[in-house]
Amino acid sequence: MRDVVGLATGSGSSDRPIGPGHTALLDPSVPAPPLVDFHYDAAIVGLGYVGLPTALTFHTNGFRVAGVDISQPRLAAIRAGEVDALASDNVRLAKALCDEDGFTLTDDLAIVSTAEAVLVCVPTPIDEHLLPDLTALRAACQSVVRLAQPGQVLMLTSTTYVGCTHDLLVRPLEERGLRVGRDVFVAFAPERIDPGNADFAQYDVPRVVGGVTPTCTQRATATLRGCSVELYQVRDARTAEMTKLYENTFRAVNISLANEFADISTTLGLDITEVIDAAATKPFGFMPFYPGAGIGGHCIPCDPHYLLWQLRAARVSAPLIETAMTSVALRPGRVTRRAIDLLGRRGLPVEDARVLVLGVAYKPGVADVRESPALEIMRRLATAGARVSFADDRVSTVDIPGHTVEKVTDPQDRTWDLVVVQCVHPQSDLDWLRRQPTVLDATYRLADLPGRELP
Ligand SMILES: NC(=O)c1ccc[n+]([C@@H]2O[C@H](COP(=O)([O-])OP(=O)(O)OC[C@H]3O[C@@H](n4cnc5c(N)ncnc54)[C@H](O)[C@@H]3O)[C@@H](O)[C@H]2O)c1
Image (cartoon, rainbow, N blue to C red):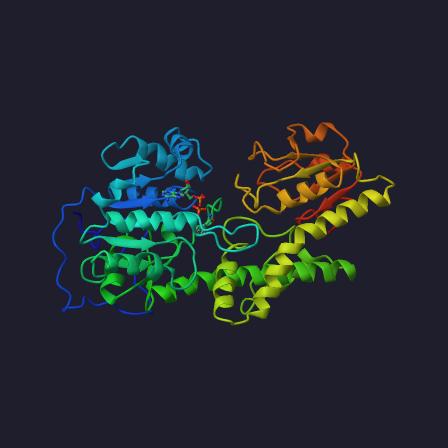
């Protein structure tokens, strides 16, 4: 077993302060766990947008890593080096794939019993009723608990409700006869990765960690030094769970406010982007958020619902968050109505109108369409009878139940009845939009486009 505390790491110093939260001290009343010679330093369960970069960061920092995923297609894509990831992660992946002993990929969860630390990074989506879908997290935790070994550090990193670490790890571990804080060490350490954003490497972003006991925090911190330069310890796992929910609810509420200000600005004949950029010159007390066609991705449209769901059980209301999330959910419908309205103004019925949705990923720079507002806009337009196509350099297909929506690679060679711009990837050539009769700019970023329309 390698000494993680003294780890010499990449870009920053591992000696940076742990953060002002709490000083974790070894609890002398807790006997040392039995010495087990684990083969791997860390096992990452779930190798998606979060888990794969996490595995690569640990590996880059000298950890022996086991990556586990139940999806064969995902494992095949990783092995082939064909993943939607930052260029820097693809370089690290190529190196890791050459390190047979230090970087193992498998669909066999049994491997987690051979790792000193286990990090669970599986999806925590919402269902069609906007309720938490804990299927993947429950399944992963059940396996981790069943396979847990004395001395292991077990961490949840998937975003979830407050108390989930206790419900899915602590209680079942204790039912198995393993004392948390003595036999095994359990913590919640939320992930802050921003896929597609090369400005903030995962390693350079401070990481919050809260253990079930002080020793759990200490042990989890030692592990996490392998994937983050700065650890911020909080009182316990529940505080860490709530921290993540606050971060993402903060974003959701503020994006919802930006959308509302965008609508007000359009009514008043003002350019919202200019307004936000001007406000952002204030060096304190303001943080810019930008409007759009809605909110997509696996985090912001989902995570606040984990909080609202648990608050409903406690009969606690959170009207501000409820309103923001309702507004977020209604946004793609508003964009669609505006699209149909614009067609109508030109005397074009939506039935058989040729509509292009440009950019269907949920944000620039990624191929991820989960919860993308584009999906709902395309579904609604197709349901209304439009002939809908899409263009997106990073996305090859979309699944719109009940409809066939084709990808076009040459959108610039046609004249569309309407182009709805939902997302613009970096380095996109948009000059051809100037030749289109009607462009609905749901990104609010195409200020120079003559005759653009806003939602
Ligand atoms: N994507 C983001 O931007 C982001 C950022 C911060 C936090 N998060 C959180 O991180 C978590 C993971 O998100 P993601 O975007 O990486 O999800 P993802 O869907 O990209 O990847 C999850 C992976 O887990 C695998 N998986 C599912 N069940 C499994 C199981 N029982 N055992 C092993 N593997 C299993 C899936 O096959 C998939 O490859 C979520 O809770 C999310 O809210 C995501």
